[in-house]
Image (cartoon, rainbow, N blue to C red; front, side):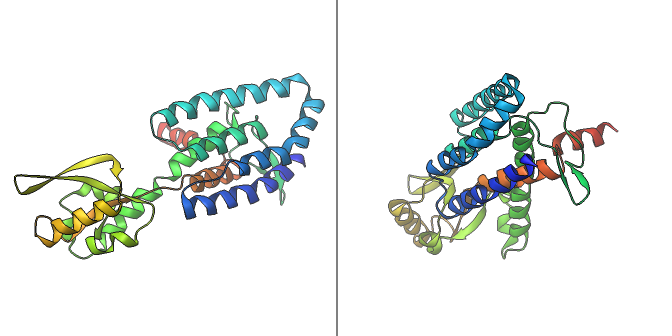
Length: 253
Protein backbone atom coordinates (compact mmCIF):
# COMPACT_ATOMS: atom_id res chain seq x y z
CA UNK A 1 0.00 0.00 0.00
CA UNK A 2 2.91 2.34 0.69
CA UNK A 3 3.99 2.27 -2.97
CA UNK A 4 0.52 3.24 -4.13
CA UNK A 5 0.50 6.21 -1.73
CA UNK A 6 3.96 7.31 -2.90
CA UNK A 7 2.88 7.23 -6.54
CA UNK A 8 -0.25 9.29 -5.80
CA UNK A 9 1.79 11.82 -3.83
CA UNK A 10 4.29 12.16 -6.68
CA UNK A 11 1.70 13.24 -9.20
CA UNK A 12 0.90 16.78 -7.85
CA UNK A 13 4.63 17.61 -7.86
CA UNK A 14 5.17 16.26 -11.37
CA UNK A 15 2.03 17.94 -12.73
CA UNK A 16 3.09 21.29 -11.25
CA UNK A 17 6.61 20.81 -12.65
CA UNK A 18 5.10 20.16 -16.10
CA UNK A 19 3.02 23.34 -15.85
CA UNK A 20 6.03 25.40 -14.78
CA UNK A 21 8.25 23.90 -17.48
CA UNK A 22 5.68 24.67 -20.19
CA UNK A 23 5.14 28.21 -18.94
CA UNK A 24 8.72 29.32 -18.28
CA UNK A 25 10.98 26.38 -19.24
CA UNK A 26 12.22 26.22 -15.66
CA UNK A 27 11.19 24.60 -12.39
CA UNK A 28 12.25 26.21 -9.12
CA UNK A 29 14.44 24.15 -6.76
CA UNK A 30 11.88 24.41 -3.97
CA UNK A 31 9.64 21.93 -5.80
CA UNK A 32 12.18 19.13 -5.33
CA UNK A 33 13.12 20.22 -1.80
CA UNK A 34 9.47 20.17 -0.68
CA UNK A 35 8.95 16.86 -2.49
CA UNK A 36 11.83 15.25 -0.57
CA UNK A 37 10.53 16.73 2.68
CA UNK A 38 7.07 15.25 2.07
CA UNK A 39 8.56 11.85 1.30
CA UNK A 40 11.10 11.83 4.13
CA UNK A 41 8.75 9.88 6.50
CA UNK A 42 8.29 7.21 3.82
CA UNK A 43 12.03 7.01 3.19
CA UNK A 44 12.76 6.73 6.92
CA UNK A 45 10.04 4.10 7.39
CA UNK A 46 11.43 1.97 4.55
CA UNK A 47 14.98 2.21 5.92
CA UNK A 48 13.76 1.13 9.39
CA UNK A 49 11.60 -1.65 7.93
CA UNK A 50 14.05 -3.02 5.35
CA UNK A 51 17.29 -2.21 7.11
CA UNK A 52 20.57 -0.97 5.70
CA UNK A 53 19.94 -2.80 2.41
CA UNK A 54 17.33 -0.17 1.53
CA UNK A 55 19.72 2.64 2.41
CA UNK A 56 22.33 0.97 0.22
CA UNK A 57 19.85 0.79 -2.67
CA UNK A 58 19.09 4.50 -2.27
CA UNK A 59 22.81 5.21 -2.50
CA UNK A 60 23.26 3.02 -5.59
CA UNK A 61 20.14 4.40 -7.31
CA UNK A 62 21.09 8.02 -6.63
CA UNK A 63 24.76 7.61 -7.57
CA UNK A 64 24.04 5.91 -10.90
CA UNK A 65 21.44 8.43 -11.99
CA UNK A 66 23.58 11.35 -10.70
CA UNK A 67 26.59 10.30 -12.79
CA UNK A 68 24.38 9.62 -15.80
CA UNK A 69 22.50 12.92 -15.80
CA UNK A 70 25.63 14.91 -14.87
CA UNK A 71 27.34 13.69 -18.04
CA UNK A 72 24.26 14.57 -20.12
CA UNK A 73 23.98 17.97 -18.43
CA UNK A 74 27.67 18.66 -19.10
CA UNK A 75 27.14 17.76 -22.77
CA UNK A 76 24.22 20.18 -22.96
CA UNK A 77 21.70 17.40 -23.60
CA UNK A 78 19.87 17.78 -20.30
CA UNK A 79 18.37 20.60 -18.23
CA UNK A 80 18.94 21.24 -14.55
CA UNK A 81 15.28 20.71 -13.57
CA UNK A 82 15.19 17.43 -15.51
CA UNK A 83 18.27 16.18 -13.65
CA UNK A 84 16.86 17.20 -10.25
CA UNK A 85 13.55 15.48 -11.00
CA UNK A 86 15.29 12.20 -11.80
CA UNK A 87 17.62 12.41 -8.79
CA UNK A 88 14.65 13.10 -6.50
CA UNK A 89 12.74 10.13 -7.90
CA UNK A 90 15.88 7.97 -7.56
CA UNK A 91 15.79 8.60 -3.79
CA UNK A 92 12.02 8.06 -3.46
CA UNK A 93 11.98 4.92 -5.63
CA UNK A 94 15.40 3.22 -5.26
CA UNK A 95 13.88 -0.07 -6.39
CA UNK A 96 11.13 -0.79 -8.89
CA UNK A 97 7.68 -0.46 -7.26
CA UNK A 98 5.12 -3.20 -7.78
CA UNK A 99 1.50 -2.28 -7.10
CA UNK A 100 -1.98 -3.79 -7.30
CA UNK A 101 -4.94 -1.91 -8.71
CA UNK A 102 -8.39 -3.10 -9.82
CA UNK A 103 -7.28 -6.71 -9.54
CA UNK A 104 -4.19 -6.24 -11.74
CA UNK A 105 -0.53 -6.31 -10.79
CA UNK A 106 1.54 -3.46 -12.22
CA UNK A 107 3.75 -3.03 -14.14
CA UNK A 108 1.96 -5.26 -16.61
CA UNK A 109 5.23 -6.40 -18.20
CA UNK A 110 6.71 -7.26 -14.83
CA UNK A 111 9.75 -5.92 -13.01
CA UNK A 112 12.77 -5.55 -15.35
CA UNK A 113 15.89 -7.63 -14.71
CA UNK A 114 17.74 -4.45 -13.74
CA UNK A 115 15.28 -3.08 -11.21
CA UNK A 116 16.63 0.48 -11.04
CA UNK A 117 13.36 2.33 -11.50
CA UNK A 118 14.77 5.68 -12.59
CA UNK A 119 16.79 4.13 -15.42
CA UNK A 120 13.61 2.56 -16.83
CA UNK A 121 11.80 5.87 -16.27
CA UNK A 122 14.50 7.77 -18.16
CA UNK A 123 14.58 5.25 -21.01
CA UNK A 124 10.82 5.48 -21.38
CA UNK A 125 11.00 9.28 -21.33
CA UNK A 126 13.55 9.41 -24.14
CA UNK A 127 11.56 6.93 -26.20
CA UNK A 128 8.34 8.92 -25.75
CA UNK A 129 10.02 12.10 -27.01
CA UNK A 130 9.98 10.48 -30.47
CA UNK A 131 6.41 11.75 -30.63
CA UNK A 132 7.71 15.34 -30.79
CA UNK A 133 9.75 15.08 -34.04
CA UNK A 134 7.00 13.00 -35.63
CA UNK A 135 4.46 15.66 -34.66
CA UNK A 136 6.65 18.43 -36.10
CA UNK A 137 7.11 16.46 -39.32
CA UNK A 138 3.37 15.96 -39.76
CA UNK A 139 2.76 19.63 -38.95
CA UNK A 140 5.26 20.68 -41.61
CA UNK A 141 3.64 18.41 -44.20
CA UNK A 142 0.35 20.27 -43.80
CA UNK A 143 1.82 23.78 -44.15
CA UNK A 144 1.51 25.89 -47.33
CA UNK A 145 4.53 26.16 -49.64
CA UNK A 146 5.51 22.56 -48.93
CA UNK A 147 8.02 22.65 -51.77
CA UNK A 148 10.06 25.23 -49.84
CA UNK A 149 9.81 23.22 -46.63
CA UNK A 150 11.00 20.04 -48.38
CA UNK A 151 14.26 21.74 -49.35
CA UNK A 152 15.43 21.00 -45.81
CA UNK A 153 13.73 17.70 -44.90
CA UNK A 154 15.91 17.17 -41.82
CA UNK A 155 14.66 20.43 -40.33
CA UNK A 156 11.10 19.14 -40.61
CA UNK A 157 11.72 16.83 -37.64
CA UNK A 158 13.24 19.44 -35.34
CA UNK A 159 11.51 22.72 -36.21
CA UNK A 160 9.09 24.61 -38.40
CA UNK A 161 9.09 27.66 -40.69
CA UNK A 162 7.85 30.88 -39.13
CA UNK A 163 6.99 34.23 -40.68
CA UNK A 164 9.71 36.78 -39.97
CA UNK A 165 7.03 39.30 -38.92
CA UNK A 166 5.81 36.92 -36.19
CA UNK A 167 9.15 36.26 -34.49
CA UNK A 168 8.40 38.83 -31.78
CA UNK A 169 5.32 36.84 -30.74
CA UNK A 170 7.19 33.58 -30.18
CA UNK A 171 8.26 32.26 -26.78
CA UNK A 172 10.70 29.46 -25.92
CA UNK A 173 11.96 28.98 -29.47
CA UNK A 174 15.38 29.35 -31.08
CA UNK A 175 16.59 29.88 -34.63
CA UNK A 176 17.73 26.78 -36.46
CA UNK A 177 19.93 28.87 -38.74
CA UNK A 178 22.60 31.40 -37.90
CA UNK A 179 22.80 34.17 -40.51
CA UNK A 180 25.85 36.14 -41.55
CA UNK A 181 26.13 38.77 -44.28
CA UNK A 182 29.21 38.73 -46.52
CA UNK A 183 29.71 40.83 -49.64
CA UNK A 184 26.04 41.80 -49.66
CA UNK A 185 24.87 38.17 -49.53
CA UNK A 186 23.39 36.45 -46.48
CA UNK A 187 24.87 33.04 -45.68
CA UNK A 188 23.07 30.67 -43.33
CA UNK A 189 24.39 27.67 -41.43
CA UNK A 190 22.77 25.15 -39.14
CA UNK A 191 23.05 25.86 -35.42
CA UNK A 192 23.03 22.71 -33.25
CA UNK A 193 22.01 24.52 -30.09
CA UNK A 194 19.82 27.02 -31.91
CA UNK A 195 20.39 30.74 -32.25
CA UNK A 196 18.94 33.14 -29.70
CA UNK A 197 15.96 35.20 -30.83
CA UNK A 198 16.37 38.63 -29.23
CA UNK A 199 15.40 42.14 -30.29
CA UNK A 200 18.64 42.74 -32.20
CA UNK A 201 18.40 39.40 -34.02
CA UNK A 202 14.78 40.04 -35.02
CA UNK A 203 15.67 43.51 -36.35
CA UNK A 204 18.55 42.05 -38.41
CA UNK A 205 16.43 39.25 -39.85
CA UNK A 206 13.61 41.64 -40.73
CA UNK A 207 16.05 43.92 -42.54
CA UNK A 208 17.37 40.92 -44.52
CA UNK A 209 13.80 39.91 -45.43
CA UNK A 210 12.76 43.46 -46.38
CA UNK A 211 15.77 43.81 -48.69
CA UNK A 212 15.08 40.45 -50.33
CA UNK A 213 18.29 38.83 -49.10
CA UNK A 214 16.31 36.03 -47.43
CA UNK A 215 12.75 34.77 -47.71
CA UNK A 216 9.82 35.79 -45.57
CA UNK A 217 10.10 32.69 -43.38
CA UNK A 218 12.87 31.31 -41.17
CA UNK A 219 13.35 27.94 -39.47
CA UNK A 220 12.84 27.88 -35.69
CA UNK A 221 12.92 25.05 -33.16
CA UNK A 222 10.73 24.91 -30.06
CA UNK A 223 12.31 24.24 -26.68
CA UNK A 224 11.16 20.86 -25.37
CA UNK A 225 9.84 20.88 -21.77
CA UNK A 226 11.41 17.52 -20.89
CA UNK A 227 9.58 17.28 -17.56
CA UNK A 228 6.53 16.24 -19.59
CA UNK A 229 8.22 13.14 -21.10
CA UNK A 230 9.67 12.38 -17.65
CA UNK A 231 6.15 12.40 -16.19
CA UNK A 232 4.87 10.26 -19.07
CA UNK A 233 7.85 7.94 -18.63
CA UNK A 234 7.10 7.71 -14.90
CA UNK A 235 3.49 6.63 -15.49
CA UNK A 236 4.48 4.25 -18.27
CA UNK A 237 7.14 2.62 -16.09
CA UNK A 238 4.67 2.25 -13.21
CA UNK A 239 1.78 0.78 -15.15
CA UNK A 240 3.38 -0.90 -18.17
CA UNK A 241 7.11 -1.44 -17.64
CA UNK A 242 10.31 -0.99 -19.59
CA UNK A 243 9.44 0.17 -23.13
CA UNK A 244 12.99 -0.12 -24.49
CA UNK A 245 13.38 -3.69 -23.19
CA UNK A 246 9.96 -4.61 -24.66
CA UNK A 247 10.80 -3.19 -28.08
CA UNK A 248 14.23 -4.85 -28.07
CA UNK A 249 12.58 -8.16 -27.11
CA UNK A 250 10.05 -7.85 -29.96
CA UNK A 251 12.83 -7.18 -32.47
CA UNK A 252 14.84 -10.16 -31.24
CA UNK A 253 11.74 -12.34 -31.44
